[in-house]
Image (cartoon, rainbow, N blue to C red; front, side, top):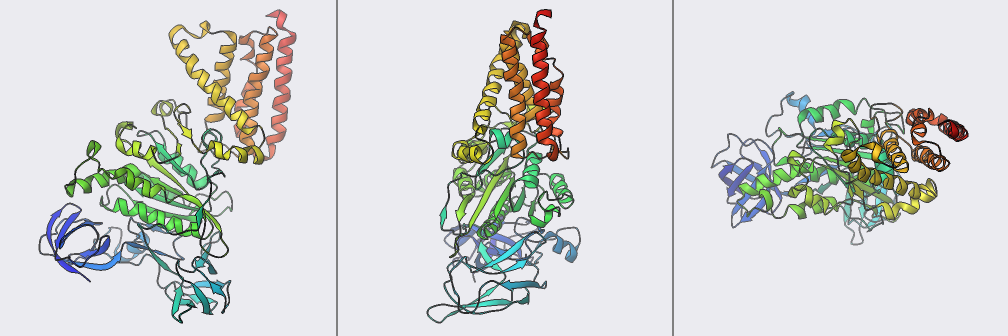
Length: 590
């Protein structure tokens, strides 16, 4: 264990000398207050340490002590429903210990050492096991079964295993390796946050992560195990989009990282999530959620730690065979923290002062996502999907953080301030967003929802694109200059925007839309367009077609309860056909 003394303090950066025996990324305790830090650079016997707590009051000569281990997280029962800071300190336990103000140097274990959990083995003594095999289960919450796994790299036979109530540090099984050595296994593992957890192989991203948000599922879907970025200016709805995905995405576990965002936004999450009902189980959403709160008023260096802490916890649940959704809000604040630390380390700055390694750090984070075959003889399938909000200063997506992110992610949901000002939410711009997973998932949509799904999606995108081009003409010379088919096209596109893409996150029915309902909604909007085009060819004036009463019912279809969908759909189609037939019969009057 290496010991040294502080030579220099520059904000969150502390330079210590006498640290020749320390290693890169070792956790250190700084000063008599035992502040937590991590070694990020070593020159001779001098170590540069980023301190994850407030450094005011530190001065040269104060002691620094290396723990000899890298920054690691504790993985075991008790993670779910907990609220941590960026370095996995449980905020609720700290509050019970020292009150509402977060003091420096406080030491509280990440997982409760005294609570007992009931362990039920699924293996027996004498069974051969390898790393990743499930030894038994713990019912962590009403809806999450926590699977206790053999740590990666351990191979042997179970010498003993027992059912009962244990704390997370007590031994529940002993595995004997071929040399006769014994590996005791408890309910808890430790894992260094900067090292991705191992798996057997990655699978193709060909299954969608269904979110219930129409603009996402229909136009720009994300795959299970996929990565997406949500960039947008202030007030365009990034946080609400992420909340919606956390609530409704087809994931077993949600890990939500508030990385450097305003404290009041994180407070909303902390107040809202326990109140929300999980749509699948009717229980509180917190019973399958891990929250990491690292707000903008917390030390800047801890932002990097919070990102790695969150994704390591997410990988752990992925290894159990769960589908995990990780929300990072926002990676821009992490990039700004990297820029600040890089400046204090006096490194050569890259574009706009960001470090030259910004892109590779972001890539290391995002590449830990994926749908994988896990370790273990039973080869479970787990998925980790990562959705990162990006908050570029002034909404400028040409800045380095956003551009580096776009080179890595496969889905880009471009939030548009103009749409937000017009109260169109989610404010995802359909002309600038994209999803590179669409082709790999097209066969899934066609076989699992409807064989015509991709065809309808392509038609909707084409109408929106045509509307954008026609809109330029309308702005110049007015709507009257358009031909009748083009006016009808503009009306159909308006219906797509207002009746299909616009979605109310706070309406109990509209907040989530199943794929079947999305398909029926697309059918209705396009049925109006197709039948109107035919009527137009028969001589019905376009002014009469756009005024038909059934359009109101098409617009209200999004609020129809699930059990009424098919019946209402057929009724609307019948009324639509009848109204257009009536117009065609009366065409001589017009």
